[in-house]
Image (cartoon, rainbow, N blue to C red):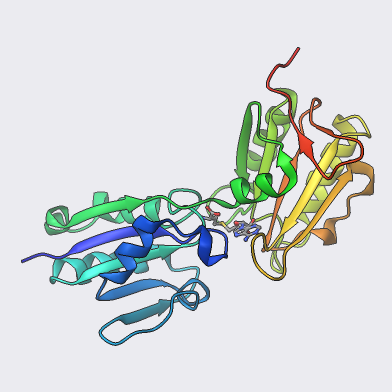
Amino acid sequence: MTGSLSVVGIGPGNQNLITPEVSDAIFSATDLVGYSTYLKRIPARPNLTAHQTDNRVELERAVQALELAYSGRKVVLVSSGDPGVFAMASALLEALETGSNKWKKVDIQILPGITAMLAASSQVGAPLGHDFCAINLSDNLKPWKRIETRLRLALKADFVTCIYNPRSASRPSQFSIVLNILRKTCESTRLIIFAKAVSTPKQNIKILNIHEAESEMADMSTIVIIGSSKTKKIKGTKFVYTPRFSG
Ligand code: SAH
């Protein structure tokens, strides 16, 4: 008998932001597969084997999960946030499409989670109230030129733009390029939000005009939200929003 494979998102950090559906899947799992940082957020218990992996070997992790599920285990493949947003669901389906035909017999489900941009936006108000997009700034899997083109076009289209993976030790300078583009193409009052470690004890949120923004304000636990030309702060409150109507 083949087992099952649930690809789940455990949200941005706070336990209360894990959906009941995901909690149930974790509760009935025999095996967890995922990046060690995310697996640490799930309490250990007897009869639950945790298979910790490095963050960079997504395809290997997907194959491991498929093999375990095929052998009859109840496997949960863990991502942070939502598994379909710059995370394991896509890697899993890539492995399913290109790998062994036998894996197609595995009962696979993808269970959503609260992605970082939604957790961040609710902390500041409603910056995603009108049209928006999300860009992953990591050039591990795509050329930098494409990222830059997408950013420029998103700004031109006046989307609110959420930036995942803005800056890491191995890519310290790309976010500076983003800030330079913003300073050249947007009005100086344009809002930018740095939301770090949202929903965790280390949460730190800054709402700034672009000329106040510095590259060092972003790291790998930060999501950056660049407002559209309509995104504004309500005076006398902590709230930022993008109106639902747009001229
Ligand atoms: N699947 C995840 C995203 C994985 S990419 C999701 O849906 O949220 C990892 C990036 O997500 C990080 O570099 C950061 O930009 C963002 N991120 C994840 N958790 C976050 C949090 N708690 N606070 C702010 N940003 C977060």
